[in-house]
Image 1 (cartoon, rainbow, N blue to C red):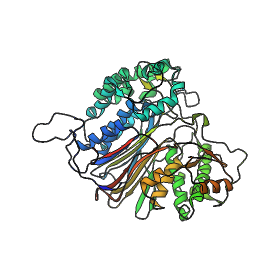
Image 2 (image 1 turned 180 degrees about the horizontal axis):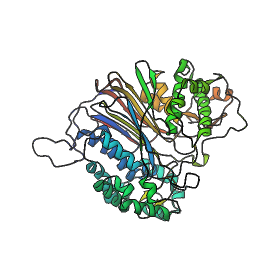
Image 3 (image 1 turned 30 degrees about the vertical axis):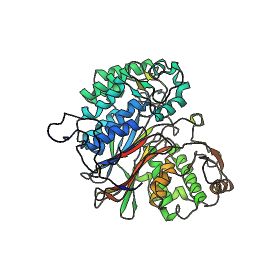
Image 4 (image 1 turned 90 degrees about the vertical axis):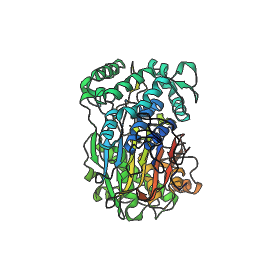
Length: 528
């Protein structure tokens, strides 16, 4: 729903010092009256924490940091401290849109022999806060620490993910104990306490993110990871660095559409699919079936190219050059799929069907700073093991394109520094993010309707499309006549985001959307 925001938020959570005087001070929920922005997250409790940070005068980056660390407790299967991710950031004090890449990396022995990845989330969030934050780091992490120590009721969102992963998690004694898997089915509302994780969060909160990578805690974590049978040294943690990069960008009238750059494959794939659909009006010229066919064929070609280049450095310019996009659509037939080559293989890991990988969040503040982040353990619940004594689920190594491919998108104007649109995806194919963006920005569809509409995507194999059961019969019939085998699957990907058509901070009239297939939450100043 479109709305002018302006109601004062009740004080749900106090951050910082107690108020003295007639009203809340900066750092306290309720400090900002009227419009303070909004936040959309895959898990409701994290969204509420982010909202309180915004109402306390925090930046979108502050809200994202607080929401992420809350997610590491309340949605650890996709947001564990052991994982990684990408963020896009728009800030009026900096020119353009920045990207922070903090994907879970390979230990020093290399990806080929790795059984667990080097965690990236803690340093990624520290960089986000150091560059764009306003509030105290310790205050932003305190809610997450308290949830872990005092316990939190399992949300519907996490209960669903945990139920899908329970069979494999039961093989790990640490995971079995933490999530209560010996006592039967995990129920919504069941209280989980994570004392070991609370202790880790306390150290990060009071001593800083560096302790996780360079201090005594780093040695403890590396030793705990080795107890699972994975290779990891304190040097692997010490040498890990997130990257601050410039986003891939494309012109859309006077605005720029921007995606995470390499090495974030999800960003590259979403960017290539967007560009191929946008060029020459290919996407908007087709009907529903032709649009899905276009996305599937371009995605299959893009997957094949990225698979060939996997493990090699790809320059941002080469990834989205005119020549690269032209190659993706060369010989494209709007009515028939391209014949499969002899070596075509599927990218989708069918063994993981029914399980969701990762989480996403999007936050924006009253000044137009916006953050869109996508986190992953490179597969649902990573390697299904917790590092003993830490409460940290470990990420799987990114050994091929079947690994999680987090991605995000933003639309800004570089002249007046307004932001109009931002979204992030977790799980599913990056082509789903590109499709929603094309539907909203090029086909003129309402953003909420674009997120809600039935989805379909390519597996990477030129003749297979995975589609939600609600796909219109005419579109399904067209895809089959075009030569595809259409396989049904429910709830493909989760997208969160916002659209402010007149731009922020100029006009605070925005549409905030949380993924309807999940059980997350979009909140703003008007929510009670």
